[in-house]
Length: 411
Image (cartoon, rainbow, N blue to C red; front, top):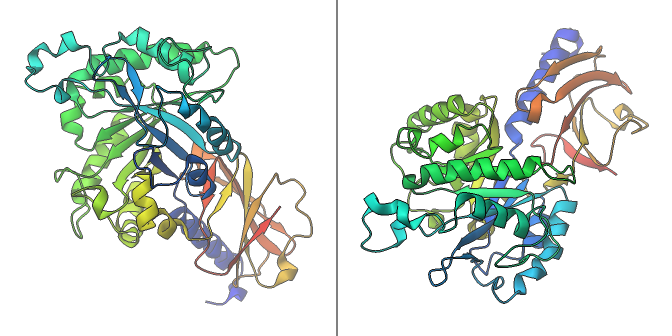
């Protein structure tokens, strides 16, 4: 079909481009902190591949039964060396990357010989009462003024939120109350800052529905990372997305107010089951999950395995460009430098330009809401400089190098 066929073909061009854009965009969250060979936190954020980084883990000391950082050799929370991460955290946040702390308690499952029927006396995942733990997290890592046990382990850094790494259903009421208590503290923040609450869950919805699902259904969680691995009932099987799709639909219907991320191992070594090669993810899985209005992206376990296997690099392209809050993207249908607007006025900070050698027909103003844009961000198509320009706002995103044409970055 020739471009000379007019506006209809231009509209087709535009729709094809938007479809390509939606398929190519993947917000990635990643867990960092469980391997000394994964690189520093600052290096992780400088890759430009991650929208959120979750520091793992704050757990409970077996000796003192008090919260303790376990960062696998990166630093020692009890001796105060983790304060050095303050600079790294600030570097990540200045690049638009959200940094959260994941809590993962010892719990009954880690105490040999304990009958689950008496689990309540162990107050897991922590021995602290829910309100006491919420206060500790707030004062030690978020907007408070200093904790009881560890002071502020990350020095002056103020994290963006707390993540619940949930593996044991017996703690349902604990997580439910903890989420409510944290949210109350969030809402009372004097600095007006918005803090996040997230949770990682196994993919079997049925097993979670009557237990930790109670906490998730409060509607208080911003992000939920659903782990689609180590469970044959809901993970991807070779060439078959049925179980994954069915489970994903259950989760998205149950948690309409949360942004859901597809949790995946970043390599075969990261998990015994459930690894999906990047090319298969793009061709078979992402087209299924990103139809959901509350699809948020993918979560990778972990930064170390991603670094070794290059999973995110394969998804995003090695020339991924990190764009900060309120950046604008511009996409041109046209050919040659004459189609490039002479001015970037009206656009903030950096923008990515993908130029395609099709369709120079003029296009009149049009606007639509694109479901894959965070918060239903507006997508606008309009004429500028003789080319079709597609403009939309996207928050804290990473954009992939286009597979057609070439990319340019305007500063």
